[in-house]
Length: 108
Image 1 (spheres, rainbow, N blue to C red):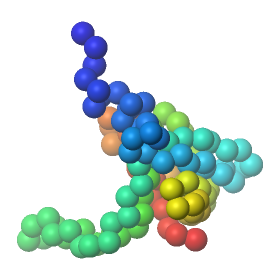
Image 2 (image 1 turned 90 degrees about the vertical axis):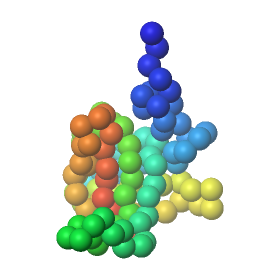
Image 3 (image 1 turned 60 degrees about the horizontal axis):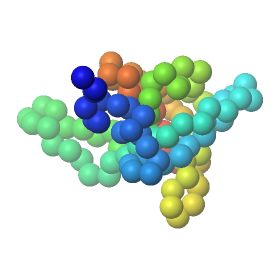
């Protein structure tokens, strides 16, 4: 039986649907091309009495297997419909344990 569409990361991260094309510029000179889903939280999310999210840094969600060489200090350029923007990568990609990783960024 084939996997449901939502379990196929390539389909989920298709640039014809939700994702944007991006390129990570590695400090050592290489590049990694990948599709990402961009999120820029801007409103404090109240998660209960003691759980308030105060991390408003933009992030890129991507396939974990594509970002093994990405490190803090690299940059990522994401191509949006209105043009490309470059961000500094603040942490190594954080795995969700589902084949997906989050890259925490800061606007340049």
